[in-house]
Length: 333
Image 1: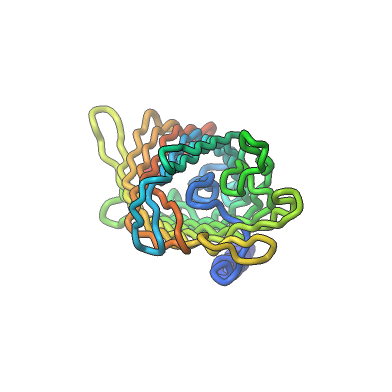
Image 2 (image 1 turned 90 degrees about the horizontal axis):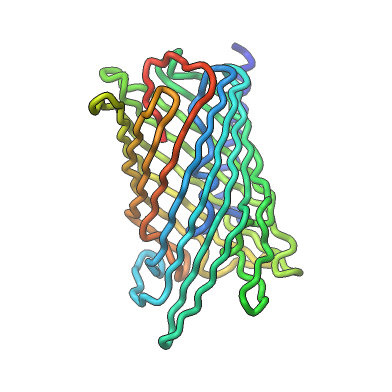
């Protein structure tokens, strides 16, 4: 249909400009220890009138100190982020849907020096994402799925938390970012011809961030823009009377350096490559449990930074509405 072709061409151009423009630009994305908003937004396409929901817990443990690509073994620093995520999506019709993601975050940072320990803990409501999605093709109809999405990141979280000396904490320890950001998203999946239960997928998520103009009261702060690329493959196997869906994905993430008062900040930004060997357990046609460990393969950070040592996510997915008779019911993480 003409309107579908128009939307497709418009979004391909828009996402290309937004994603590749980020590599030279600067503004705001979560640091390596922040709330994982961009990587968790977006559902598979569903039948008209379907409500999809997912509740997830994400653990990010950082204890690897690096300078560039080299590990710096001092063992004095570590950081942990616990994120509780609520994701929901509603399919308005066969080609248009709205997704939303909300977060609550607990963060801890520990630095040891001269037999003393400096421990800082924060918690609070995090930021949220709203996204409009255009489903240009679906697996149920053609054996492939193509979606494009765009929407704002809403600055719901606080940015003024203080330590026990009443000193405002740095931006990376705040539950919110203080800025309005733009999220761009594209997802493509296709069944493997000789095995319909197997699906290969690719996803691109770009984030162009705004500026917190009240950082530490009178300053401005902007995290570096980011882009993430996912490549994965998933299948279905029967175990007893249950269906399991193992999958394997590789994630590449690039983040530009942060800026404070429009000056580039040292020890920020970098590149990361991780592998995600995931497993989903289909409790019913509408309910799924999933477990997703994330293992670092490579990272090259700007300056000297803590980088993730291990990450994992567990979640529960449920849909309300019509169960579409897809050629494949493989759940893509």
